[in-house]
Image (cartoon, rainbow, N blue to C red; front, top):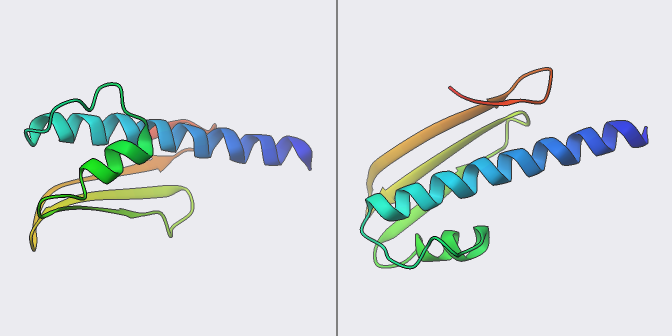
Amino acid sequence: MSQRKDQLAAVEDKLKHVTTVLLKKWAGLSGFYGFKAMEYDEVFALLNTNGWKVVIDDTAAPNRIVELYQGENRIRREKYAVDEAGRVHKV
């Protein structure tokens, strides 16, 4: 039971890391500055300013969809899936 919880926590950490790297990449492409030293929450807050909005959909447990909007227009979208071995793949 404990080993299963550790595996789930490790997968969540991997998904959070991949999402953080993606948000930093998008921040650079969108013209923001000073994002390289920021953590997940700070980059997320940065991308939710000045008409920008980030939507993270992780309702389907092993999958995560991240979308970036400017106003009502979707600018970017990425989807990640986790395989049986716990590796995160971009779909």
